[in-house]
Image 1: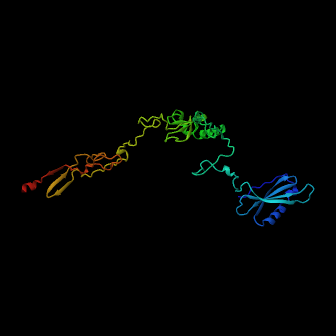
Image 2: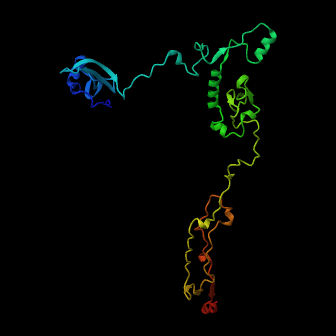
Image 3: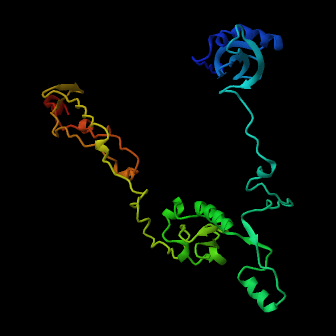
Length: 331
C-alpha cells in the first residue's frame, strides 16, 4: 500500500517547484529507498516540506520528509533538513506507557509485591490506636484501627466497578426472579458501602463476588422447585407420539390380474370319456391388500405389500362328467 500524499495550494511557487532539489538531497543521504513524490505542505511563508514514498524494506507506509526554505527575497530554495517519518498507514509501536501503569488487574501472581502509588487518592489516614482498650475495640468493630482506609474517591471507584459487573443493568439481573437484597445468600458489606453492596455466598450464583443490592440471578433463595409439569413457557412435547398412516394410502393399489378360464362348451376327449368344462361358477373377486392374518401386526414403520392380493383364478372350476354310453354297455 502506498503512502498517502498531501499537497497544499498556498505554497509559494519557489518552494513547491523544489522537488528535484529535495530528491537529490535524499539520494545523497540514502541512495536507495526513495520512491515517488507524494506532495508538499507549507510550514510557514518561507519553508515547506516535500514528501516522498519510502521503499525501504520494513518501512511500509513511511515517508521521507525534506524541508526546503526560501526567504521572501530569495530566488532559489535550499534544503534545511530531512527525516524518515511514519505516514498515516505506517506500522508504528504503541504509545509509551509508564512502567508503574503497565500492571493491569489480574497480573499479580503469588509472591508479587505491589505498593500503592505515592499519594494514592483512594486512601486516607485511618484511626490510630490510642491505647485505651475500650476505644480501640469499638474502633475495630466499625472498621477503624488501620493506618489507612478507603477515601470517598476510593469507595466511589470501587462502587462503579462493582455496579458495572454485578449491577441491576446486567442481563443476569434482568432475568432474575428477585434481587440480592432479598436473598438469604446475600452478606452485606460493612461501613458506608453496606446500603448498596454485599457478597454472594451461594456457590451456584456469584459466589465470592461483591454484588449490588439490586442484582439478582436464578439461584435466589426464594426460588421453588417446579411442579413437575414442565416449563410454563413451552408446550410439552411427546417424542414417543407417532402418526399412523394406512398402508393403502402410501402406494396406489395394483389391480388384480384376470384369471384364465375355458370357453363354455369346450370339450376334451380322454380315455373315451367326454369331459365338458363348465364356466367358472364363482366370479372374480379382488381382495384389498393388507397384512396376512398369520404374519402378525404390521410394525409402526413397516408398510404392507399392496401387491399381495388374492386371485380366484386358482379356484377349482365346477366339472360335470358324462359317461360314454358305449363304454358302459361294454362293461
